[in-house]
Image (cartoon, rainbow, N blue to C red; front, side, top):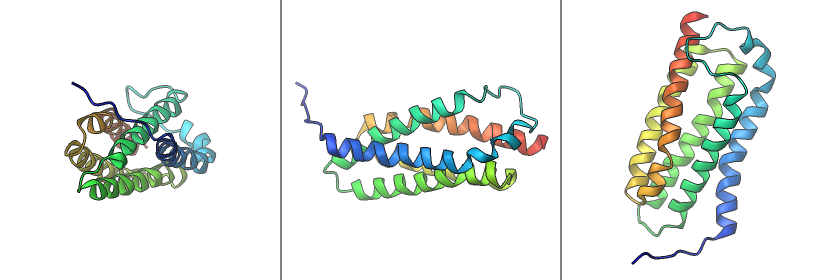
Length: 158
């Protein structure tokens, strides 16, 4: 028999606002550097530019839902899981600034590797509390893996 949990709309909205807001703010701060980015030599499999904000919006939405699930849990390691979530969100926020604004392609590659490790740690911690919350982070891990490939390729080619 399954248990039905009441959704706390306020907490869900806050969780989504934090994650999506972080992505939007970072995107706005790095938007001015897009003209220079368009001139870079890109590696094979680079998707068209219009796809990036769509994918990131979906990923930040999944992050918000996932963090909401963890926040609503009564697990004793909830604070640890949410702390790792917050740290990776901050690291994620800084990456576009390093990559696009500063064009620091090597440093941003190291930074995205740090983000990748933090995402794995977050998934591990989330899985101890909620398998669903952990699985919601898997597309994010896969995309950041792909983004690391693109970042490294741009570093090598430019």
